[in-house]
Length: 259
Image 1 (cartoon, rainbow, N blue to C red):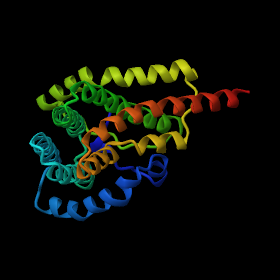
Image 2: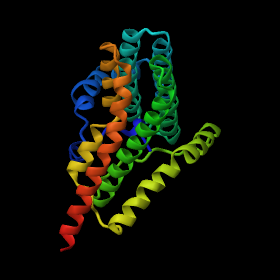
Image 3: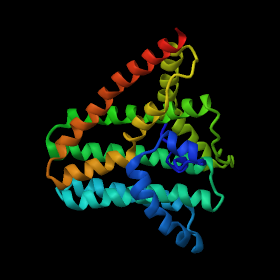
Image 4: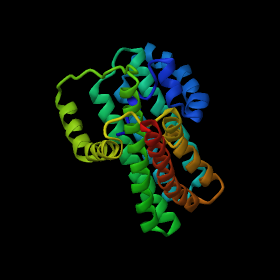
């Protein structure tokens, strides 16, 4: 599903194919400032992943205590760290499956904690649970549609190194249990609706990229600053609903291409 440790593009074409504006214009340039320092002092990418998860959980705790401004600030720090770990892994030549799986599982844990606290502070636990599922599905579609686009257009992707260590095996098992069914479901729908044809275009990939986690946490932070955390829960649902016209557009284009 989501693949934050691999989220920076390896080519200009790939970056343009799925450009998340807030990520590219704000958080990635900021992360590039700190990555050389982390590399010089020998910080490992997994350590940054764990730091980003810890900050995300602190944001959830602050949210649960009603400290909305503090939670909003911590969420943006989490996003910065989330970008730094992937950049550091590439800069140091340590792009591994362990880092990829750890990053993805950590994001899921933090998201679950955030939505649990959103349900608590808004008094709408059911809405929060549904919105959490909605966001998880949106992120899964974003990741897999981008992968399908890359495969269809032969866009290269740096493959993480498999170490075969115990941590990697445990994290791979968690990924297989939590995310692999979503990945298969999205690809099955694509195969069913398009028969294996390349159907998703650059617009689709870019649209989905801008529903990515960086944008989501920025909007959640904005809602917290405005004192309206429940507004974000509805936004997550709107994101899921927006996938319907996007899919219909892709299907319409696919039919027109056949004709």
